[in-house]
Image 1: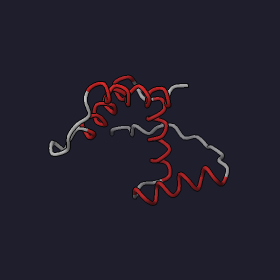
Image 2: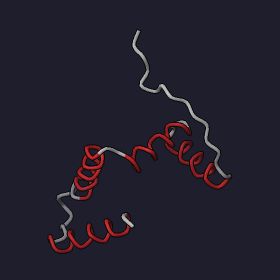
Image 3: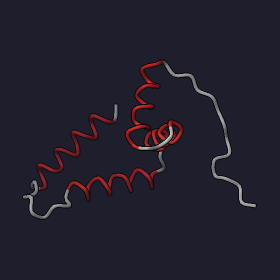
Image 4: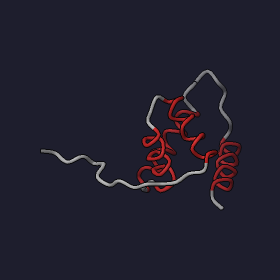
Amino acid sequence: MRMSALERRFQILLDQERYALVEREAARSGRSVAAVIREAIDLRFGSEVTVRANAATAFLAATADPREPGEDWAESKAAMDAELARRVP
């Protein structure tokens, strides 16, 4: 018998505002509240591989439409630097 990857259970108390945010996202995305919380943990504490994969996915999505004129490298780099500065305290 194969053991589930989800093998730890814990309880968390949230204020109503935070719970409402998570609940709305769960309803919007068709997932459980627990799945939304697991994703948030993965996004915040993801491994370096996960972080790089997410960055690559975002980059490819931003450059997916060849009909749109792209930014030049200086503009792209400035935008990425600004996003990094916003996310990293």
